[in-house]
Length: 208
Image (cartoon, rainbow, N blue to C red):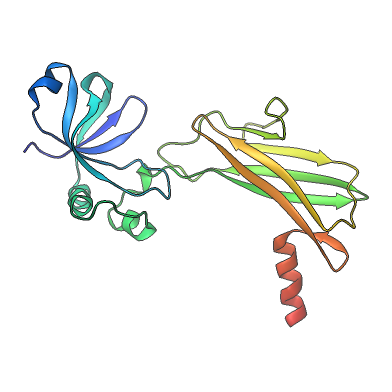
C-alpha cells in the first residue's frame, strides 16, 4: 500500500487517500484506492471508501503528505465508518479547517409605528473555504437585497400590524454551493411583538 496522501481537487474537495494501482482505471487517468473525504458539510458523516473511481489525476490540484493526526483519523474512520460528525472528533484530529459550515444570518431590528427595519449580517465560520458569491432575497429570487462588502444588509417592512400574533420574514441566504432558509421571527408577548431572544430576556426578568 502506498503512503497516505492528502489530496485537494481543483474545486477544493479534500481527501485522505491511499492510491492503490488499478490497471484499467489508471490507464484511463483515474485514481483508485482507499479514501476518506475530509471536506464534508456539517453535520454529514465521514465515510471510508475503497475500490472506487475516486478522481481523475488531472483534477488533483495539490498532493501533500498526511500529518500523523490525519493518518490516525483515516484509520479511525476506516475501522468505524460511517463516523457521525462530532465537534470533539474534529478537534481531536485537528481537521476543523476542512469542514464546510453553513453560513449564518445575524439580525438587529427596530420596530416603530408599524415600520420594521432589519439590519442583517452574514456570518461565515469557514476558514479554509470561505463562502463564494453570497446573496440574500425574500420571496422572489429576482428581488435580491443589497449586500455591502462586509456582507451587511438592510431590509424594511412597512405596514406592520403590531397586534398580530406572529411575524415572519423568510430570508433566503444563497451561496455558490446552496441556498439556506434563515427567517427573522417575532411573536406577540403580552401585547408586544418581540423576538425569541427578547421574550426569553423578559421572562428571565419576570422570574427575578
